Image (cartoon, rainbow, N blue to C red; front, top):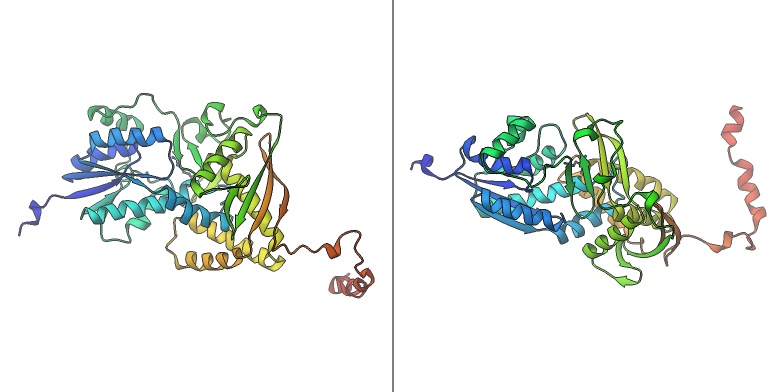
Length: 390
Ligand code: ARG
């Protein structure tokens, strides 16, 4: 049998942008694959982006596939993140939490298609290469990363694109990654940490200064740590998050401009928009403070941070991830209740909360009949060791 005759197939994680578009002819010409299958995984990118990816993907690749993963993304990734208060150095992990799912769906297609290889368009500088690679390498498929391997300059890339009929209506100034949970904007002048972000980079949020004078109070109900209704309307995750992005964005809620420590150790300047994430995380954490014990809260802070670090690194298949989720899920059995959040000029503040599981006791309120004198004995020994030292 002559294996050299067999057509070699590669499945590419395809976003429709310049990098992944250039990857298609590169995979043929430079790597010698006979067939390139481009897969766009929909995790809530703007519809126009998905449409554009389809048009370009169909034109450039041998076969194009679109996979809708929005519901799975919200149910199995975003909801898990909310329960763990996912946050890495102030970043709501939007891109990070989506990559493992995108990689998983690409691998599924590769298996169906009996492909020889899987490819992504990440460079060798960022975190995303790690998040894709780690999932791709759970298989025996070859892993190809043309952007990382060939390290083309922007100019070389553009020239190559032009030669292969890859064109974009408008030159994209910023590198944007968007899904239902967050929008991340990097690149160009933004790489200079002292450069002020121009208003045009924001698309989900108005500038807090231009937000309406009138504040708005929204009511969110949680069941076992998961948001289930908004303003008394039961809602599924996808529409609930979309609506919170709208209403939060209108009030200028959910902008982050930060310096982030990448996995490789580089610091990078990052800008994010994430109104729904801000609102849900603020509300969820507040509800936890009402229903969890002090000991649970202290311990969970550490669990949440470790969880966030794993997700940032793309290590969802580390057994620790599953163990942490088991702990988190156990705590969330009591995290049910309602939170009122006030949206005002860029801020999302909790103004009220209630739960049948509240650990709050009215017995200690200002005008209760609590026998205060019995606290005297406790008070007498409080700080005992410190007093001896002094
Ligand atoms: N810094 C973030 C992360 O590592 C976001 C990267 C998003 N990429 C982009 N092209 N904007 O998760």
